[in-house]
Length: 223
Ligand code: HEM
Image (cartoon, rainbow, N blue to C red):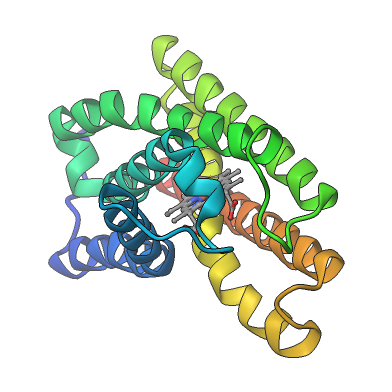
């Protein structure tokens, strides 16, 4: 019996590159906002109601933004099958992504629990931030554990979940547009509900992606 290794078609490998492009586009709003905030904090900004909490305590927000930018952009390329196949890039990027992801989650928890809050950020939103950031940390840890055990399938699944939670920052930027139009920018409850919904939406999409991967694997091994 001869075994044929299926090579990806040019069309499939081009489609593979559309994934990181879409993911980077999704996080473009928080990435640009983050770059603007870091630029502002690196000067001597006048203190306003919008920036006072960051000017008085800049470390967590700077760690958060640098980690989030790295995690979102570099992480997007981990989904390109061609780059995973080479393995070297994937492993190297992974070594940067794990600490960057941990920095995003831990600095997010720090700002939610210790730092002063934005006017519209109530207790419910802080609790959601702590819950989802802790989940993100746990998913990264499970992803690392899986790769140590050479369980590539579950490594991919946990990392996909962790990435989905991080890039909910982009989904939040989108869902906050109707929230602001309907309820106003400073309405605490709806803000928490819409922000929470963005994390749930992203987790649901991650589960769909993971399931689709597993179906594809089953079909491939059957044929
Ligand atoms: C589980 C993931 C995350 C959590 C729990 C989280 C949490 C937080 C918290 C608590 C703040 C402070 C909010 C404030 O006081 O206004 C913040 C700010 C920020 N986050 Fe995140 N974040 C997460 C992921 C991300 C990602 C992936 C990005 C970028 C792609 C991002 C971009 C930003 C930016 C730019 C700010 C500063 C906002 C400003 O300047 O007003 N975050 N985040």
